[in-house]
Image (cartoon, rainbow over all chains, first blue to last red; front, side, top):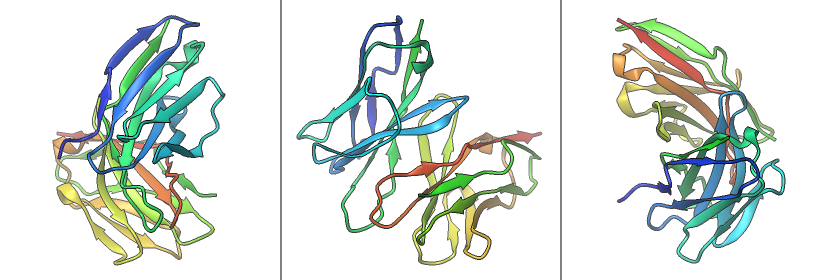
Length: 115
Length: 113
């Protein structure tokens, strides 16, 4: 099976711009979670989508949003970029049902640099 | 709510020495626990998981971890370190029917020749 893919891998944006990151989960996985990783804050949970619905949300401002499509692919959008948004954004997919525990499989991440 | 602490942000061991990375968790219900490894410029890779079956869990690359409820711990060990083990290691916790993984701050493992 192909793993989780994220595009683009690297991105440079300017303050005030907006950006969209894409994640394609493992085939058959219906849950997609997004994380922000920075040296100072570590891995922080952004949100999780399951069957096109946001099921969980972390403590991030409304500038961070996401969506999931019917094929389980997900996009994450950040509007009005700030310097502090520079980070590695990781996407993780899992089977994501409600009846058990499903480990998360991570993509390679998108490195976003805001200048 | 769950939380995870990892004692030691940086651990150094000699090649061939025992690796011990510490993880303590807090959870109001029986947890599920995971160890992930991250190599530079890569995503996280699952090493092993505890999901309430055997308390001693074996994972990939010779790693294992033991769930100790009385100590609320899930420490990761490997008998003999290899240079290729140098990476960052994350402990994570979730709960039954929960979908939110909470990650610890990570421990960077250095392996000295």
